[in-house]
Amino acid sequence: MPSQRDEGMPPTCIRGPVDATDPSAVSAVTRPSWVPPLSDIAFLIPILVLFWCTTGVAWLLTDSDTGWHIRTGEWILSNGRIPAVDIFSFTRPGSPWFAWEWLSDVVMAAVHHITGLGGIVLLCIVLLGLTSTCIYRNAVAESGHRLIAIVLTALGMAASTIHWLARPHLVTPLLAAVFLGTLIRVQRSGKSRLLMVLPPLTMLWVNLHGGFFVGIVLLITYALGSVVEDFIQEDRFCVRTRAKNYALTAVACLAASILNPYGYRLHIHVAQYLGASFYIQRISEFQSPDFHSFSAAYFETLLVLAIAAAFWHFSAGRPTQVMLLLSWAHLALFSVRNIPIFAVVSVPGIASALREWLEHARSSNSLRWLQRLSASVSDLEAGLQFLASRRKRGRLHCIPRLAVLTLGVLLAYPGHFKALRAEFDPNRFPVMAAFALPRQTTAKSIRLYANWQWGGYLIYRLWPSLKVFDDGRTDFYGPAFVQDGLDVWDAKSNWSTILAQYHVNAALLPVDSALATVLRERPDWIPVYQDSVAVLFERTDGRK
Image (cartoon, rainbow, N blue to C red; front, side, top):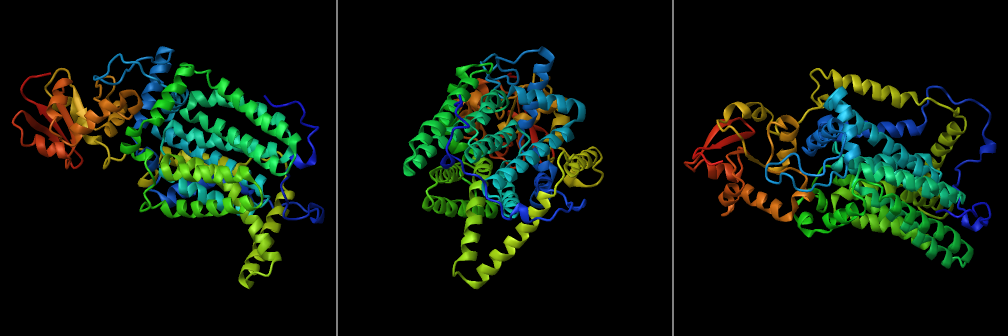
């Protein structure tokens, strides 16, 4: 835990933020009432990005895992306990299951019960808005430059849209931003007692999402960076205090993470899942970014800035920033699911480097246009600092509240605006087929094969009357079973053997899939329903 020697830390241990203007030079006038604080604008950035850069609120529902998360939460609320075995599939009934995001599932189920999918979408937008606000505040705390902070926050949020999905993982960037903000303030002020909030936060995090280890990694990074930095400065006192406080807090957070329904077994499970090369090779969100996607330009810009900022901080003797920027840049290149955390971690470090670059350009004999740019940015920042210094305390943050309320009404009554419809895309999921499925099959017990990407949607629409072959819980099914499902999907030579092994008597497939083409040529499989998205086959030989 943090040391009690907070107040005795020498000035060299404290790195305070730099203000762009001298507060004493600001005249005593009130801030114009029509000018909102930039933290409120930061909250609105995800809403603007969602409608400007994506297809609208349905973008958050492009992954069917949302469905089984909601139904899991409903089961927990109905039964008063966390499921220990599988409840959704007919292929793995009774097998042990880690419902490791159970608390998020409960929240999603409660929101869905009251407001439907529109409430789920609104909840996700609020989480993204809070994340954006935390990123902005961290960037201001690190750089003291509001203009740079708000621009980089917008860039970071736009780069992370690739993983904006209505799933529990949205809490991890938010809590990572809270962790990082605490660490920045501890480093700036020397008040290590602030670290005491992190272990309880970890206990909450571990029950919301499996990304809780990100906070521990951040603590370890700050501990190692403090050791290197203080040895460079030959300040052994800071080595014994700051590094020790970070390390002990990391240990305390690790201990707090044991407080989950599965104890230490969850850590083993998560490590085995994330360390399996099978998933890295076959699941898109585990793979490297596609630089042909629409969000690639934002990510590339952030990546270039992060690498440049890492070199700048290296030259300035700031190893903590170097390790944060380069390590998470590498992880973002390794897997797209790390891009949102990369945005959270990189924006403050980039902001401080950009501020110093501009100040250096203004004071040095650099290009004239660069000096003019630096002067213009400084003038704009001086205005923002002036407005911020006049901001009244105890604000109600009316703009974010009004935006959330307005968006909630629009989601409830979207009218003809497709971008406001909180629904699973009927061009992506078997929406019409799910209506027809119970009526079209003659089997008393349907044992349906469908792509695991459709499994979560079918659970949402038809469970418990229908159980699925598999779904997005790839950590539960395991590599061998997932590979069997992929073999069937690709219509490989063993597809019929696998379906017979699990007594499958129906198949719901995309109309243009390889297996659908094969089944159309088989006399023992007949199509009983088809629309523009899906085709439903039934086995006719009576086998179940």
